[in-house]
Amino acid sequence: MVDKERKNLPKAKRIVVKVGTRVLANGRSRLDPTKVGKLVEETVKLRTRGKKIIIVSSGAIGAGVGHLNLRSRPKEMPSLQAVAAVGQGILMQVYSKYFGDYEQPVAQMLLTGEDFTDSKRYHNFKNTLAALLKLGVIPIVNENDSVEVEEIRVGDNDTLSAHVAVGSGADLLVILSDVGGLYRGYYGKKKRGELIRTVERVTPEVEKLANSSFRGFGGMLTKIRAAKMATRAGIPVVIANGNQKNVLERVSAGEEIGTIFLPERRKK
Ligand code: GLU
Image 1 (cartoon, protein in one colour):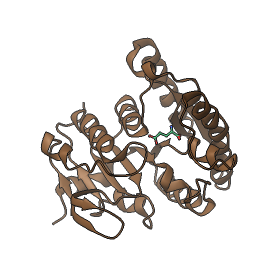
Image 2: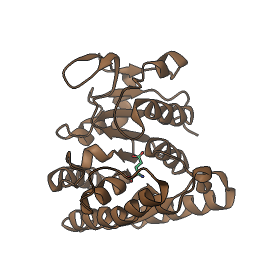
Image 3: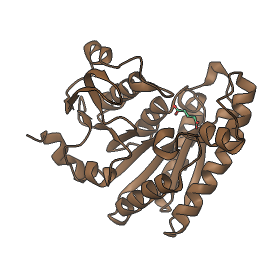
Image 4: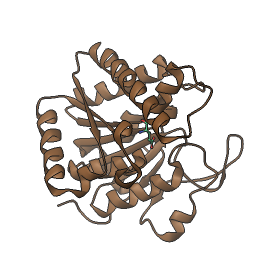
């Protein structure tokens, strides 16, 4: 049976979509035009239905690594930040081109942890975001990797997307990665456990299900913690595989896809 909260999802008007690097890039870290094109097309479809969309996009470091033909991600912070500075430009260029094909304007917003802890900056961030949405623009948010130091980093885009969802008063947060949701048991390419369709509450037991061997930037644990933050603020969260066909439309239509985390209370 489809969870009744899913039936409310078609009503969600303001949607934050978090896109992981693996949803945008190929194995060699190059942005994959087919993948970016798919995400853009699906996002535009939601826009034409009157939804307001905010994208939280990873991929800057990945795009930088690919563009500079590096064999792997640099380990030292300054080099990593340099690569992010190269990649962020490319990322926005690609988004602007693809959204431009639909005459959909986009904006870049680069944030740091301080934008959520300093009340003045938080206020400014919320106002800018609201103004962009009012203008019909899709804000594309990332962490400002090239100037971040450890002390002020949010650290991963799952957490960043939860902050953005809360700050923007979103009705839904969709986290797209290359995993189909939260699984009970081992998750791997060939063998996967049972997909959990609905998580009523993010308890320590649920957090334990996050498989620490999961590859990628944040992994499942940061996703679950992001889900905890958003659901506590009354925002439902769906984690789904971004490479699935029509994933955004299907989530937004309330179809049973991925894992839904139910809001702990109604949004104010
Ligand atoms: N900000 C990083 C990037 O754009 C990604 C961080 C993350 O995916 O959690 O490459």
